[in-house]
Image (cartoon, rainbow, N blue to C red; front, top):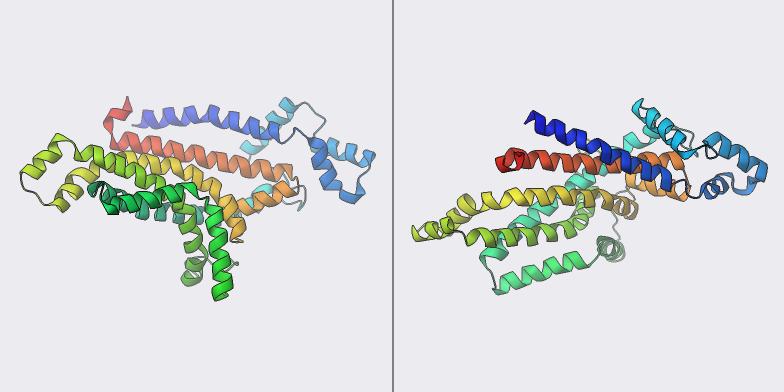
Amino acid sequence: MQKIILRRLVLSIPTLLIVSFLIFGILRLDPDAAVAARLGEGYTPEAAEQLKEELGLNNNIAFEYVKWVGNLLRGDWGTSMYSYEPVLSEVMPKVGVTLELALVAVFFAVVIGVPIGVISAIRQDSWIDYVLRGFSVLGLSVPGFVVATFVLAFLAIQFKWIPPTQYAAPWEDPVKNFQQFALAGLILSLATAASVMRYTRTMMLDVLRQDYIRTAWAKGLRERVIIMRHALKNVLLPVITVIGLTMATLVGGTVIFETLFTMNGVGRLLIRGVYERDYPLVQGITLLFALAVVLINLAVDISYSLLDPRARG
């Protein structure tokens, strides 16, 4: 098992290098825009040229990339062009907000998606199945930010209520923390819950057609025992993989939801960095998101290998 984990870790390195180079290169496609945005009304050709020299925008991109990666490995993620603070010191205090939002969304996706998928499968082609499948199609079709916008507008207009904007840690103020993350996490999870529901239903239908399930029915076992003891455990393994892979989508979705719900997380900071053309900040946050996606996929691979010995080959 240690060899599998080591092999997966080694294979992740080229992925991260390719992603980091793409991030670095794309942000330098139009260096003049960043310089103009940074200088604002104080823009002059001389000042622009001096700033480009300071930022290394006139140097060879390969040289600057190697220099950037070397600094990253030493823990230096650069300095923000606007706040003049180290990127890491700006990003790290906000990681907890983004992580909590993503975990709440995963929780709702599992709690909603798996039971509904199971019920839909064991009541196949009934009105319950059609209704649940209809909700899953709706969840996949309507973008989460549209749902969030309507819900926030409805709550604000009808009840004069909006979620708290100042972060409260769960151990300091559980009620306020719940108000901040429950609604945002629930809406963010809808598309993922719909995917989990549809995949769970498909896998459950496949398992219910297996011979050992027919044997269980023939032995006169109760439906609850057949589903919970014999069918569900064989369904959960591939579903766990789907949940892990969809977490990457949730991580990306936090960027929009933190802005809509005015959460002071990494995603909202990224939006600010893009507006301000803050290269070091955008590079650092984008790489952090890419690293999170790679680690999630790595965890999925390892968990799959642990749960299914056939995947260790």
